[in-house]
Amino acid sequence: MAMDLLSTVTAITSFAGLVVSLWLGLYIVTRSPRSRLSWLASGTLWALAGYFLNNLTYVQGPPGSRLPWWWGWSVALAVPLWFHLSVSLLPPESARRQRWAVPLVYFLTLNWVAMEAFTPWVVQGLTTEPSLFSSAQRPGPLYPLFALYLTAVPLWSTYNIALARRSARSDVMRDQFGLLAWAAALAVFAAAYSGLAVWLGWDAPIVVSSLALAAGVALLGYAVARYNALVEARSLGVDLPYTALAMGLVVIAYLLAAWVSNALFGVPFVAFVFVIMLAVVTHSLYDHGRSFLDRLFYRKRQQQMRADLRHVISRIQPQADVREGLQSVMETLCQAFHAEQGWVALRGSRGYSVVAQYGPVTLSERIPKKKLDMQEISLRPEEVAEQLAGMAVVVPLHAGSKQVGAIALGPRRDGLRYGEDELQLLEECADAVARVVQTANLLLHSMLQIEGLLRQARGRDEQLQERMRSVLVPQRTPLSLLGLGEDESVALVEDALRRLYDYSYLGQHDLSRLRAAEHHLQIDEGAFVTHIDRGKALQRLVLSALDKLEPHGKRPSPPSREWWQHVILHDCYVLGTPNRDVMSLLYVGEGTFNRARRRALRAVTRALAEMERQAQDLPGD
Image (tube, rainbow, N blue to C red; front, side, top):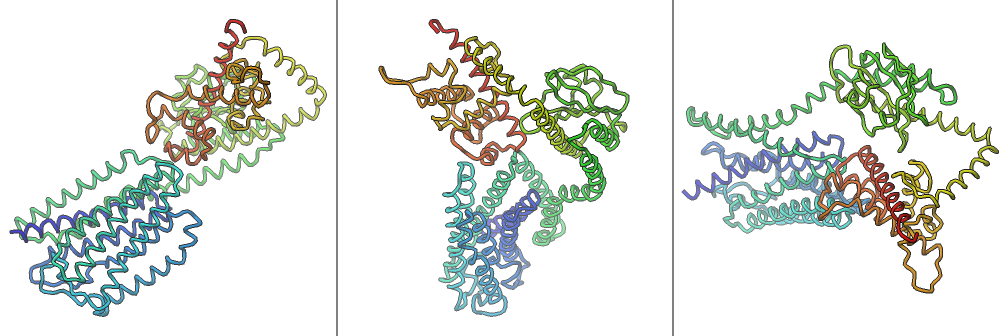
């Protein structure tokens, strides 16, 4: 009875490890097919799947039959792949020092596998003991060295992952490396347990090492999937649990079929193992294969559309009138997407002016700025303004942090909605058009500067006097500082944040003349006030305005959406964290990061303007 229970538990553990390792390997490589880490991790998981297949066929094989010991894959094949994965996670300098060991481990592993297959030096075969215990294998004269090798290399891999964890720059990355280190430690335990038991001939159940290795497999697959998501600035969300649930339901359905076949027709369960493995592979690759076929059939059309747009945009000469070039762009876009109508509008000082049109639409009036100022593509522009009625999509044209225009397209003639591929192509086109418009604006601005140098010099004097007068007049505009416009005020605040720790620079900064900065001066009685003291006061003022963005409570990990603006400004400017690391921390892309940063800068600027207005209204000022 006890042997039957042990046999059942061993079979269940081996089957679960086989399915999980096979599915996780396919999940990782289909989500990040261009990542070398994905292929190394998947190869490791698939190699360990052979170990679980060995145990399962030993336990559930036909009665009275003896499978060869090398049936399936040798567990040693997973060792070099796991070690290669650990070296790839190291910092560049540490990885360079261990690069020589990667081919050596591959070479030694192939030699051990060859000796296992063709000589009795490592394993001499199976004894008459039940295959549920390690004593069922008879070790050869070189088996102690083989067991030591299977333990030492995973231990080295664990050390490499721990070293990578100490070198990580963020807590999120350290958590991922911690999971990988636990997975490698479980593999070390399984190798040491099995090797010592076989060498000394102990009646140790193999289910213990199988459980440890199955747990290590699950941790390895989950950690690599999360690591790839962090590096690629995407979130796993519900994709991993939903996919796991769907795969579990599929496996359960096949297990029910195997149970019915065994009960009614006496078909052994082991006969369904390869069928279930095939089901896991086909269901895991279904979505990826469908996407591949979609790209295969529609790639030519997308490439032709991109080529036509690139050809039209490349013909636009920034030094000439860009209106003719934008007219060609609009005609190409509407024809490519089968749009009924569309237009291109450029941003001016008094609003947006339509410079190119296609179809029955005729817009001659100027569109106010507040109607078209947007950070992201809009699919329901008819709710924004009456002037946009009839348009199905509006794409803003951003050159850096400024919006220079917008492209609007009407509904499609075929009645279909704009899909993800079409929207992505529209955004690529918008980026290219924005660069051309920005270049034309810069050239025009340069020519005006050359022609009116003296006139601009007089204008600068008048502007300087206006700024000096504006210091004495309370500012009521929320986004206005020192009498400047919105863009200039935001630029001053961002410049102060970039030089936040340069007191000498801040002491001579335009913002140091704010009345609110005087309230942050901390000078002992009788001491002289220098520009360095004003720089320190400006730093405290800017930090106090930045702290107002911080939500109440403890900062979560990862930060929720309400924390994004404070985290971006605080980590990038106060802590000096690179933008890429902040994007990985927030699970956002570059576009979302830039939009949140622009909104945060405007919020801090508005807070400073309100603080300045209140400082000027204080009694006695």
